[in-house]
Length: 385
Image 1 (cartoon, rainbow, N blue to C red):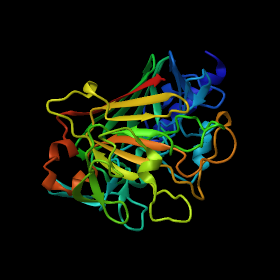
Image 2 (image 1 turned 180 degrees about the vertical axis):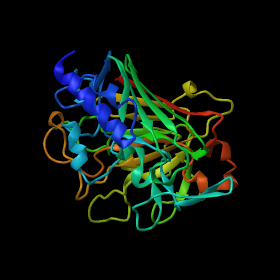
Image 3 (image 1 turned 90 degrees about the vertical axis):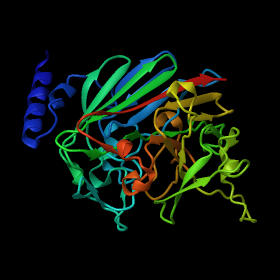
Image 4 (image 1 turned 180 degrees about the horizontal axis):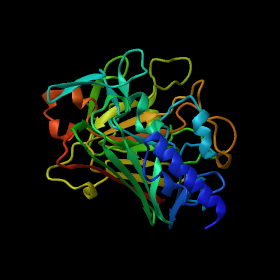
């Protein structure tokens, strides 16, 4: 073992002990990083790069229909670039303890009142609040050529009860990426709905493409329903239908995203509305996640298709909106910034804001007791046309 490695281990141990952090902080420094300070896993057809910041997926490389390697997700060239960025703190990272909106930071479990820390002026909580897992530097428990496991020791961050241990495992097999999110509640029950955010552009922002996902097609075979939201995007508790051939009809056919989002009220030039909605995943009972994909995203330009299989019962679909904190394209994706509608995410999760809607009778799926283990499992299957 090199002297530099020994020094790194010693400093990691001191830092972990001093801050009350994870016992895996020492182990993390043993695993190799590439020149961009990222962890690489790969198998036939796919290669992924992750950072410690929220366990974020920073790159996903795959060859398109012309044999050209494309990086088809948003991210940063250097792993540490995310720390200085003031935009979306969950960009391509794990989301916990609760994905999506909570309309109120106050809630009760077993007659005990809790308040989640939030930095939003409307007092809503989004993706775990100001101390959500996507904002944390995680540790690595194991890393091999085709797999990596991040661990989280949540010491009651941000007003959530208990001190649960979380585990995020990514594994790749030929043309597949498997994601497992697990959590064990310690001391007291806790609300939980974990997810992983990934913003996709299956063309890799190719110069011969539109550099948006408006030409991509999306199908959500089991999503004839979606959750109603208020003017701020917070779920109201109502559920809406997605009639056939409507703008939200992604269930009956593969719909071009640009067609679904076209704003017909504009007569001067073509405009599009943003997609920022949570869809129910209503599968015939009984079901297994392997029975069929909950989402299918495809690009005719690159010939790349990704199918998402998941055991979760809703999907938050979100098109990218550029702004003052927009993201630069990575070196392998070209020059400039990611434009409006430059990417789309499909975040698998529990029903949004279930904590404040007891009428849904989803207490068992919303609150994790100390007598069981939470598990969210998803598989992304890639194919080339």
